[in-house]
Image (cartoon, rainbow, N blue to C red; front, top):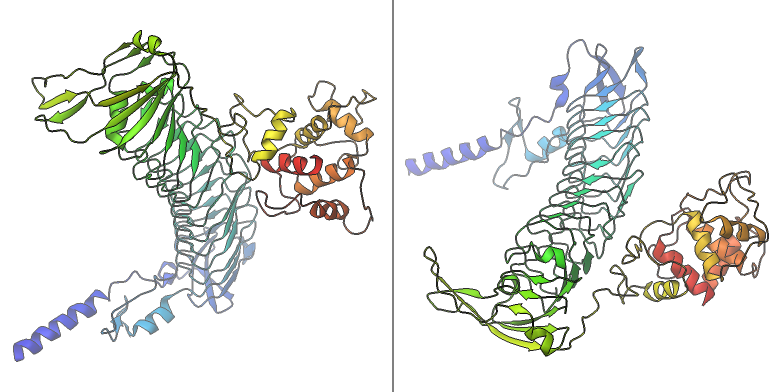
Length: 625
């Protein structure tokens, strides 16, 4: 009996000792005797006059409105761990008390009440240049942060686990953000990166599960590893032509349904889009040369994909688990670099080779088959440009077939042309000296005179689907010559911004390209050699635009906003129902709403918001057709 009591006591002592080791939450241990005490609501903030650094704060402080100077010394830095709270402690119900780091005996509730930060609001002055590592980590009640205009650096994990923070605007002065800066801010809904940021750091917003709105005020060149990983509410992201690198897991676990990848993109990292369960289609631009392992793994809604024509490095299991992926388009040059591991565990029913390849490389058909099919069949369409098909057998161990595969080759040419191809499809090869594999042909059916299915979707554009709300508008715009797409004319780039010069040009083309009566531009920023010169002159003559500012400029390179486009269309239609009441755009918006121009477009109508290409053509189509 005594042994049982002793054992129970030892277990209790051990259990208690486990909870005497939490990280010290009271950050005032960093405070020196020489530090100045600055009074704040709820407690004290501590300031080092020699370095201009906020060194610590009582966890009871509820609001930190930091002045430019404390006792005549400029505040230039928020020190490491300065406002850091304790990590909320959870303990089994059987644990009645714990010992704090200073030996104090506390209940779990008492510990959390005393050690957790109660900071709710922070306002930093323009004098602050740096927020050091973990400065506000575990400030779990923090709801508002206002940065000063002089801030340069936000350190690593500076706001990690600030669960209540809902919106962040990073000033243009910030040029450096550390990894994990806003990680696990689970209430964060919007974040705006200022013009000083071109690289989104590693795990910057990982686990920000409420994040829906990400704004880049300057072109972004790279999104780092897992920067937006597990941001499950994030459904859209706009990338510009400066973008080069998408890091490992950068957008994994998001709710993206589609994303337009810019033609500047070179690298897509491992698992970059893994677990994007709503992603339905992807077009990888020809600029991309590298795809990392499992780049699109478990994108269970992904139905179609076109690979880049420039891929020289492809990882394993790129589409593993993508059970809805029925069609993959493989450019001819990329086919030469493809192996079975690239497409392992994917499910393709249709494989299209784009372009005019002359050779189907060794094991190409088989590698795809082994990668994506077990006891199944699939079809591959081969263009008539092919002059040679290298050996396509698959391996078995000790003559025991691993699966039954029926491949259908749809050949674009005639049977006579097929017979003229140098091909190696039916041989059985004995194992090599160092191999136990025997290579066999598989069940093969060839259909002749089969037209190459279109590899594009709507009006020749790879990035427009029939189900897109703007599909009819895009078709109309191309037929009318309003816009012929971008790049190699295989991309419509639906979510690219539209400049004011482009918007007026689109309208002018839609109206039949009427000649203006004058060749003299009334605007200092519109010249005779500009592509938008005639459209702007026509628009001025017809009262569609009065310019910007004092009327001497047109601002042709500024993004056209939604209300500006509505005004252009309203005036082009003769300003029906004009009242002159309200804001300058109110009549135009009333007219646009009456014609349902603004319904069901890319985002809810918002005054001042840029209007993307998909919505520009949609507004034009609905107004003019």
